[in-house]
Length: 215
Ligand SMILES: C[S@@+](CC[C@H](N)C(=O)[O-])C[C@H]1O[C@@H](n2cnc3c(N)ncnc32)[C@H](O)[C@@H]1O
Image (tube, rainbow, N blue to C red; front, side, top):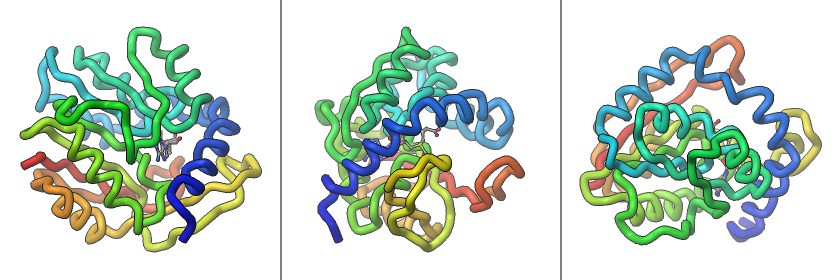
């Protein structure tokens, strides 16, 4: 397996290329996903107006973090793609964003009351995903919460396009058992775990959602 730095450099380049298209396609998508809105609502009630939440892998729209920010929660978005961060800052001028790899973030220990990773571990090979969960644990305060969303499946490997833009990017699908193991391995107590079928406008993989508490 190549070093994670090499894999991350492909992720960065691919999302730099696809940032505008990703935004155009997905910035309003949450409006069509009632399940996801209810899930984010149930995550949001764990916080108050003094809470700080990180959205790890926020993409160019920052729209998942924005959903929480609109509820009065302070949100910091993080993404490895400079283009995504540049766009996210333009579209969300009242929110903060950092350009960083989510396996090594520029935050102190115990910085956040919660962290959302919505489809942001999906470009990392499984053998490296524990590093990301260890980093999530480091930056989340004791008793803080982690929400992770992924696409379900077993395959992983490089693909040759992102949103039909020719590029090279690693793509990883996860089984429920793997997600449960990442949470418990990093010291999170699972409070919620569910799968849903894809909406008809989504890629045809089931979705896995999990919320854990740092213990
Ligand atoms: C599928 S998009 C998800 C964006 C947004 N969270 C959403 O749900 O629409 C994945 C995002 O995660 C970012 N990402 C992937 N691996 C990352 C890493 N190791 N560090 C930081 N960002 C990463 C990508 O650049 C991309 O913007």
